[in-house]
Amino acid sequence: MMRLWFGGLVIGLWLLLACAGMMFPLRPDEVDLTRILAAPGDGSWFGYDDLGRPLWDRVVVGARYSFFVAFFVVLISACAGTLIGTVSAYLGGWIDHATTRVIDVFLAFPGILLAIALAGVLGAGINNVVIALVTVGWVGFARLARAQVLSLKDREHVQAAVALGASRTRIVLRHLLPLITAPLIIEATFGVAGVVIAEAGLSFLGLGIQPPTPSWGSMIRDSGRYMLVSPHMMLVPGVALMLVVLAVNMLGDHLRDHLDVHLAERGRR
Amino acid sequence: MTRFLLARFGSAMLVLFGVSLLVFLLIHLIPGDPVEVMLGESSQPADREALRHALGLDQALHLQLADYYRQLLVFDLGESLYSRRPITDILFERLPATLELALAGLAVAMLVAVPLGTIAATRRGSAWDLGAMSFSMIGISIPNFLMGPLLILVFSLWLGWLPVSGRDEAASLVLPALTLGTALAAILSRMLRATLLEVLGEDYIRTARAKGLSERAVIFRHALRNALLPVITLLGLQLGALLAGAVITETVFSWPGIGLLTIESIHRRDYPVVQACVLLISLGYVAVNTFTDLVYARLDPRIRFGGVA
Image (cartoon, rainbow over all chains, first blue to last red; front, side):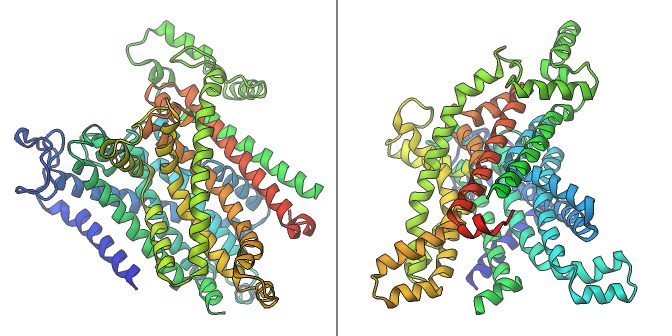
């Protein structure tokens, strides 16, 4: 229960900062030369960075970018992956063989490495980050959806629907997809945590969101040189990032324990 | 067993083919003229033509592909645009550092995960369990590029025990290995706890206890051995994450391995080297996974004789 509360609270805050932050006049790029590297306190919650920019404003804007990148990447990956996996498993035959091979190849790249290479080749920028992360992200959903549909498509209720003359689209939409949503939602939740880390990682490497736009990853990178004199520059975006990832993972664990029918049954046995 | 080996080997070859094809296509994804991107806008047309020819980009795509595979077969990866040296030589220089780091990270992960997972499972619900699982949850949630700087801050800058970066002395390895190993330790200890809990409910554990074996013997000789099997599979899968994590960890600590080379080459627009690095890391990953499957088959007679291919 604590996991749900903590997860919900932090994620709610993240969402609030991402959305409500747009309505407030934030000045993430405003330089105040008198407050370079100023520590938290003294009129500001989080202090100032090496150029005299307010860290609170920068972290809130960073929350916006991490949230929207995570949201869109997971949404697009989940839709594309589910579609590919479901269709492949349902149609079977050579289509399924080919899809499986493609999935295997994508799985053979250590996740973030392909994203790093793609972002490096395509050039930095938020659009390319989304493209790179979707290219890596759809595979997990496709594999999961395929495996789930394979185990379901010969069930009696599907055979009954076929016998009643239901179209393929209707069978997939009404009789297969509703049964595989629970594992997909769990996968999507953990996916959000993965994408938040990946986006910050790419920005940390200088391949993601470009300055002066703040991203938690690039803020952590920029803090490197000032670590000893002003650790708050690293701790502020670092703790924000850690809390969000922790919260999403906890929510994912909670959902897995409560949504996944198979696991719940095993636990009761 | 032979059939299993052949099937596993065959699918590994197919995957290798696909991976190398994707890596080949990578350079064609560069928006605009790749040669201009690599040499910069102010480059001379003659230089661009020379490079275009050297990279084979002036040929038809299928000819380029044929050349690419012909060169791969003899381990000729071309020349670095930055240092003008054969890429194979550069990779061989950098590889030991990455292997050293990966092995050290793996060792850290196992040394932490096995005791932690065992304690958590054998004292389920206790404060030990809660502590171990909280550690694991936090470990999963701290990315390498945050863990690394945090460790540097505490152990290098505040305490002054360990070097900040580089690979000049043995102590340099400690922080990168800890950074790389923590996330893996977190995942493995969770997994080990789960499988150990399942194994401890099996009949043969009750038998072992009933015949009067000490709890130590039950856990170490009977339970842990079986619980480690799925962990080994996960280890193979996670090694990919470890190798990819090495890219970031090496950047944080200026550790002169393949990962740092990848990032340096991306920033230098030295794309042939980027391709080679991605290919090498992915090939390593495929090799490790295939090897893990074989080890798994060796350890688990059900797979060896069951004909699961």
